Length: 543
Image 1: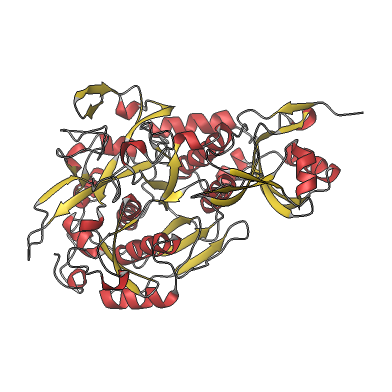
Image 2: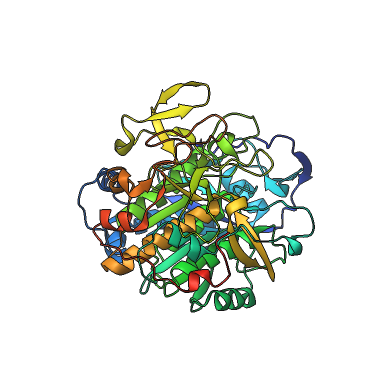
């Protein structure tokens, strides 16, 4: 007798535009799939995250307390175990706190278990991937238990938000005469004194890797102690440098070198995962529930247009981000490098996810100018170097409701009346992101100037780590407090990202503006001290 099956809500997938189906996948090929389960107290967690986000004074939960209140029920996991055995799938990992189970098995068994047909696809830019179309179906007896099935389709879900400066000649010959070290940028933004001692900064990476020799040479050149860097593999993916500075290696190394320069005494945990919706969500949830490294702040420099995500993936990611709020973990996410359209294939205006979630600090980009020999910013405008060289992401979400701390705001537009916000506005904050005024880093043995909003996320994560170290506790969710302290930012009033324009106050290009680090520290209850002169100028002039 055939068992009754149900469509899994939000699991529908459409074929990728311009992709070519190459045929079915070998039924004996093995793969991993992440199954997200309902958690105990899901509504209570959502309410807790909402209350914290609205400014209610609630102490964050320890990871142990979180597990006691919100872990998945053992009987729900037992139901999935029975289902897995029935379809000859093995349980590779159970994570009760993250409410997920990782299953392993053959394509043939996964197709039968979830009612899908998997095929190989080829795309001009995404390359070859495993794909499906239509919904996932599951037996009725586990329909109330399973909330998402991720990883059957492994199309690349996100892209790194960094940009190399485009200049004539080979990359090794590109001068860095207008680039800054991370310490110089921290000085220009008046970060409070500190080194992040006692903190752990988590970095989410979806490919590539770093070379230890690069890190040793880079931090030695800056005159700062080399930080402790820990590589954490997720779903079989680890530190795998490719030797391509313009590829994912550039993202990984940029993130490490920025946070390591500004917070050298903080541990840096790098979570490497496959670039798929399953890998991305799994990396974030694993970082949040990592009892060994216990990061107090996460930096995410990857993302994609909101329309590229399935509803089940957004919901599962949202659960992880709400968990971060409850745990007191700050999440800084890059707002994108493709202007107001975020590189969407249909040419529409879109914002980047996960930066568009109301539970993260969305980080946009600016371009700074500093006079030769000066130690302060002469001018700062929206980062927009044109279609080929990048512009900060920003705009209005179509997925997320207007958060309380953005009520009454308007998004200034180019050649049009300001748009009153009806949904979540992006970004919240901004900082130097243009490759023309970018960051001097060492990637795969090459010194290169790099920009992108992916530099801004680790920059703010480093600021949070310093503040956490000074206060002796985690700052946690910041947005509501920062919107009440707009004078802690340098207001950016010139430039645009395509559709949206800079304007006094919050705007959909640079958010509240670029940071005044000591003022932000004070707004969070920690008086800050200026960075002492010294190693930030080791690599030469700020020009």
